[in-house]
Picture 1 (cartoon, rainbow, N blue to C red):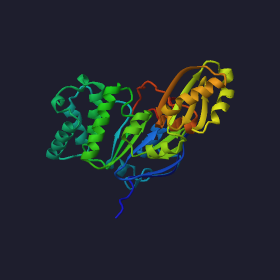
Picture 2: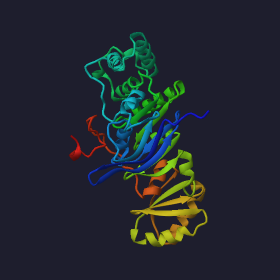
Picture 3: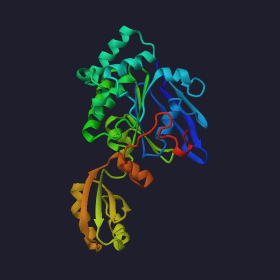
Picture 4: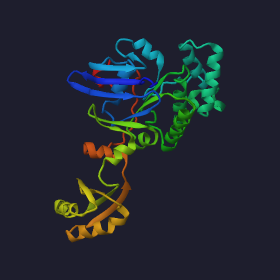
Amino acid sequence: MQKPNAIEVSGLTKKFGDLTAVDNVSFNVSSDEFFGFLGPNGAGKTTLIRMLTTLLKPTSGRAVVSCCDVSEEPKKVRERIGVVPQAMTSDLDLTGFENMDLYGRFYSIPNRERKEKIKYLLDLVGLTARQNDLVATFSGGMRRRLEIARVLVHSPSILFLDEPTIGLDPQSRRVVWDFLEKFRKEDSMAIFLSTHYMEEAEALCDRVAIIDNGKIIALDSPNVLKSQLPGNDIISLTISDDSRLEEIQNAINSISFVHKVKPDGQTLRVYVDNGALNLTALLERVKEAGGVVTSVSIHELSLEDVFIHYTGKSIREEEAKKVNFFIGAGIPQKLGR
């Protein structure tokens, strides 16, 4: 018997006055899937999570989370989900254990069951030795691991992670990824991740929806999304004289191993087969067309390339912003309370 979907979204839309933050979005997430929502800051990711977690009412459309309509049965939805928002919300004046214990008490988990679950989760995230230390002494990565573990105390059926590693250094980010991978092997549940880190979505997610300006522009597994792009490598050529870019582009477009050429300032992104093997021939054709190459790079296709393919732009790394959990990055600040 097929399991019901953990999340079912149909035509979901959220408007703030004249601004449409989420625009007619539809998708499903299966009960054991790691599903990613990938897009730049301001694309609508947090607004969508806030609707799915009952903190915002949709303007139109429907969302069912853990078999409950988010508009009609918000209390039941909240009982069945775990949410890790962008902002750090653990209490700095409590220990790691006390943060976990207080959360479990909110859900009226019996004392013995609560302590056993906390012990298991702290061990899973590698914080057993620090459980009696104040959270104020924790690093950013440790605090984030604690917050993910904390929302699992009541055994939710769906875990929502909104930019869980934003602001963390690369090493701490990798530790959080390793924990999430480890957790998936221990417990089967749906995980909904929003992120603007391409490598995060590619490393963790079974399927990825790419969102831009409130709309889903692509949805599939990372490998399938990459396979839909022409060629298997991208050669980036920076040309010294941008006045000859069009002439050079036309010259290399006719080469058999070149699938597509996309200008980006003084750089030409060339989608090719076997980039390393064909680089010499490509440079020779540029030279014949009168171009002078000042720099060259070759890389395999990534989700970043998929995003550029569909939107014509790259996702910019942005500094983490402190957000209020109840207002959050999902609401334009002038419209927040």
